[in-house]
Image 1 (cartoon, rainbow, N blue to C red):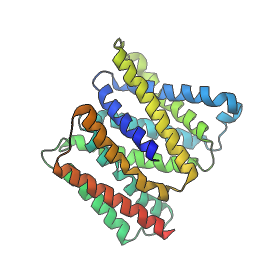
Image 2: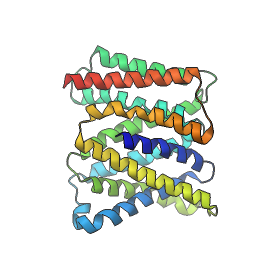
Image 3: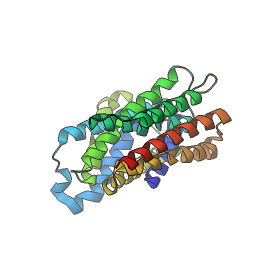
Image 4: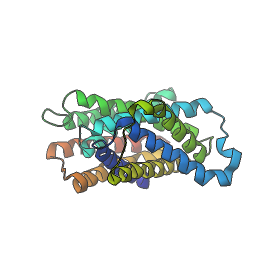
Length: 275
């Protein structure tokens, strides 16, 4: 899980760089076409027809749609906000997941769980305060991503109990490449700069590695035990944003990030203690 979130922080940093040099549809298509190709090349010789076998094709379609939506919202968000602020908002997802998981189990999350949710959203309000990059309509983009990413994580966890990791990775890549690929003839722009191709390749590698590691983590341990480690992505994002863009969050932003991280970690620990 730690390796996965490190990949995702690096992916967000690469995506922010790509937003400056490549159109949205081209970037998303390349990312998922790369994922589908590398998964097929690496897994097909070993698994053969089993690579395509699934008991729940509808869930694969839903997972792929959620992943493409998450990628599009991430691309649009990172055009406007820093990597660290973006990551802090996205880290609301595990807190939301905890409440949704309780709802799916038809039980009351409890007072502490709701306090963690309130604490997490309070941290978001601190990060989004007037004067910050996220103050205004741009805040709706990462908040929308929280919804799609939460749903994606839950579907990934469910599918990981029955389907092979390579199968999950292949279908999400194919669906992710197919949807923007339909519009690609009208959105394609020639790319001549080697740096742009290098960034697109980095996105493909980091995305594939991150989601592969995430799926493997969910196969090895319950979501409730892994969730606290998700918040290390904020630390990785701050470091990456500082190294690549020279962006250092101010005291208020760091306070909001800490509030989100502490609320999320407490929520996860509380859920683990219930088990």
